[in-house]
Amino acid sequence: MKYLFDASAIFKAIKENKIEALAGNYTIELARYELGNILWKEHTLHATLSEQEAKALAKTVNHTLSIMGIIETVDYEEEILQTAINQKITYYDASYAHIAKTKQLKFITEDTRLIKKITPTTNIISLDDVT
Image (cartoon, rainbow, N blue to C red; front, side, top):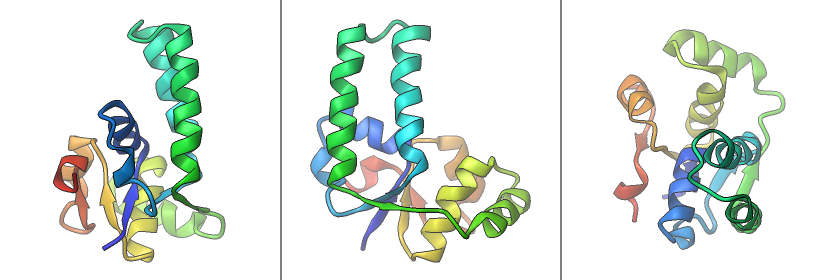
C-alpha cells in the first residue's frame, strides 16, 4: 500500500531519521510550505532550533520532498471545501484527507485530533504505524 504523508508526519520522519519510509510515497504541494512554517516556528517562536539548524533542516526537507511524489490539488478545490465542511476540519487538513481518499492512499499524520476526527471516513494512521 502507498501512503500520503502530511507535513507533521514528514517532519517527524526527518527528526527521527526515518526518511526512507517516505521514499516512493506521496504528499501534496502544500506540505512544502507547512514544513517551512514548522522550521520557522521551531526557530523563531519556540527557540528549539538555531538558525543554522533550521537552514540545514530546510535542505533536508528539500531532499526529502525530492524522493516523494508531490500531488497537486488543482481542480479539487470544490471537493476539498466540501470535505472540510462535512468533516468540520480545516481546508488544509481536508486537502490531505480528500487526496488520500481520491487516490486510495493511506493518510499518515501526527495530528492526533485529526486522527480521532476523521478516522471513520478516511484511512488514517500515524508514522509509528508504518515504521
